Image 1 (cartoon, rainbow, N blue to C red):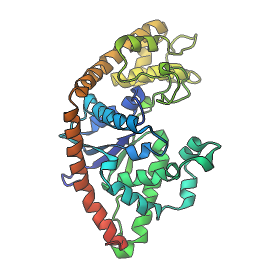
Image 2 (cartoon, one colour):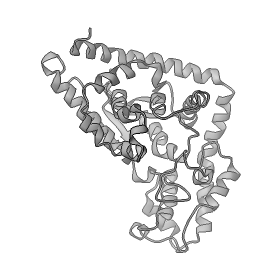
Image 3 (cartoon, rainbow, N blue to C red):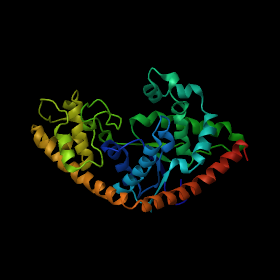
Length: 339
């Protein structure tokens, strides 16, 4: 709990390439809605990004771009703390302490590592393997109460809870009992999970070779219309119930995108468009996307011409994050006997 008695929320976005609609609907749009009711810290998690090799020049640019998109989307630096992870060394220090607490067996159960490592497990970085410990550090460093998570991060948050509990138990006789709060998930709505425009069974991704698979936040209006018009559908009409979307992932995805942007339930969208042609629905979806994305794109252009403002926001955020985390790390050092 923060000093202002608001519950504290922590979340972050990796600076690993052009951000797209999936990032916006799956994370950033929710960030905006939380900042009036919670003490929010929104981090650019660049240390997580380097678990796989990044071009240094691109990484620097991507860090700046994520900060700009935070601001362009409506995150208010007067209400929320916006900062770069690597600018606060306490993240790395606490992550090392958690490396010494976390059990190998716990990390071996992380399905996301197995998926990313694939058959080349012995050749991936150790950072990718211990990634969940750094994520736990990000969250617990600020004594976070709530963490917005999608399906792919639920397991990592469960591990964070296990780490917090083990720390509290291991050092219960040394002032550590109940030291870390056990953070709860803020489960994001199902409709905020955005899939590829070309394959509804895969998440919309920056790493997809085809730019037609995603709507990027810098796409111009004509390109948005082109991508939606070419988005994969099927020959059947739009159904009248959610149950009839089963086995139709591309249709479900487009309807979910529409619902997320319009802040309506999917079944309401179905009632509006049941039996209609996909050409009509796609036109309306394109219009809705343009009305949502174009203000962000225009603000991004302004921020590109005012980089000093973005740097000032990040400098101020770093100062606030250090102030908030300094208290925690000093207490942790004392509890475990480091000072």
